[in-house]
Length: 545
Image (cartoon, rainbow, N blue to C red; front, side):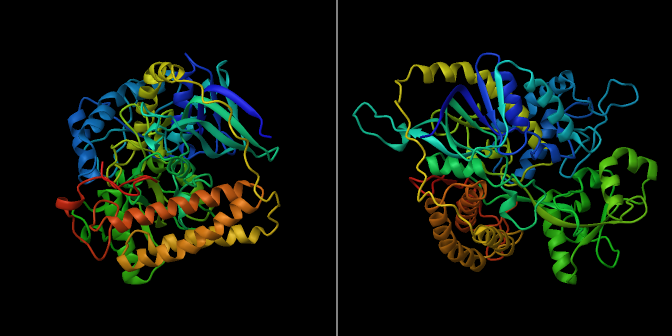
């Protein structure tokens, strides 16, 4: 028998979007925030570069809109882009009021703004090179003491609770479904709990762990997208996976990225021969957008057969480098690279999921009672390629908008009839899976296959091979999931497999190259047929927004 708990709002995830929403929504509702590991285990904590917003008289919202639309390669929604870029500056200043210590100029009044690839002006507010960690620190301090917020660590959402509602004719369809909360695995007790809520908000981050090499933390297994898709919500644009061009290449450290801001401050990419190469691949050179730089590095590595390329900022003064990038400097030095004297070995790595759960201007999904924020969502801002440092901006803007809309959403849901009792979680065969190697083998297999076949450069043949291999992997994982008692590894493996399948399906449908999706068989853009989002749901499998 599952234990049942209730709150007005259930927030799943403790990154910047989840914490921001919880803090603001708690002014008029009871909020339970669950996180599957520790509350600081988030992608937000790893965000180095900063948050992009127009904070200087030398910049303009129109320029920020233009840069975002160019980066999005035809798929960024102009209305959404205008909302985020217009409302963004106020949200950044609000973070500063909360206590976020952004770097300021010597006058103490103006932001020390950074420059990053794809931007036409300095507009990236930062806290040295630990911006995400600083924002997370402040938001956690605020939420931890709020009387209307309960934070539960080591609670892993397994599946969403869904109730079907009849329409006026008495028929029940997916369009009438409603989210009532989630089944949640308490990692400490091993029991599955029922967490009921009027509104459930997915803030679970991205899916970088679906690839062999990633800058993401271990928690990034695509849980929110997988749960939303299984529940019947629409997801979109999952073929657009951003590979960060410059992840530190060192066998003794994983997930450590070298911020876009390093190139923004003048660093140059060099090949094995010590020669600059990016101008060969893009006229913007080292300050091209991430998709172009990642493809350039990939091509250069394949041409030379080398394991990495190098990022050189040694021509800048040592004291500037140490002050501007203290964390990068200290980390690289700890692993044998003094970036003031020698170039940094780097490789591309899966970094950001530009697609996600389809939401409206307020963060509401296509499923009643279900919202999504941050990297889990697909707002229409990023299109086919996210502009650097627009992600933290999107997270705080949409969290604010969702909180503004929340009283109306809660009132609407309270007016609906009660859905009655929820079924306890079925424990399947109630046996313990003793062979952990079975889970590890499938986990490693998916990640390696995705890297080889659905990485920076794709082809029809590679995608087809991946689909064939996924078919039997999915069947085996499904049997594990229902035959044995739940473990966190099984839950994450199941979600990884679902997201991998959705990425492959989306990439197979888009027979063109646009933004982050590059295929050898269709190297050009096809605006006539593909200037639209790739939208998937269980009922229709594929449709266009």
